[in-house]
Image (cartoon, rainbow, N blue to C red; front, side, top):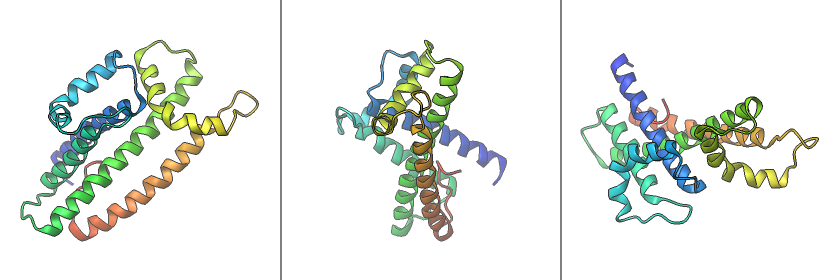
Length: 194
C-alpha cells in the first residue's frame, strides 16, 4: 500500500473511531458536559445532525450515528479501493465492508477503553480529569453486567475486564475472517480493519 494511501486510511479510521465513540457515549448516557464529549460531538455533528432529523435517537440507541458510521465506512472504502465501476455485487460488498469496518472499530474502541481503564485504576484510582471519567462511563455498560455476576477476587481484583477483552478478541477474529473473504473476492480496502 503506498504511503499516501496508508495516511488516508489512517485518517479515515480515526474519524470512524470518533464516530463510534459518539455512538458509545450515547449508549452509555455519558456526561455531555464533559469537554471531551463536547469535542467529539462537535467533530461529528456535521455528519450526524442531518441524519438525526430523520432517525431520532432513543434513550440508549442513536441510529443516526450508527448509520453515519456505516455510510462513512462504506463510502471511504469505495473511494480508497477505487471501485468506481459500480455493479450490484460491488454495492453489496461495500455495505458488508461498512458493517464489518464499523463493528470492528467499535470492538477496538471498547478494547482500548477497557485497557486504559485498567491501567488508570492502577495509576490513579480516583481520577478527576475528564478523560478517565469518560472512559469509565463508556465501559460501564459493558463491564457492569459481568461485574454483577463475577465478584472481585479477594474483594480487590476484578477479572471482568479480562473476560470482556477475551470475548472482544474472539469477535474481532470472526470479523477479520469475514472481511478476508470479502477482500479476496472484491479486492477492497475496508476502513476500520487496516
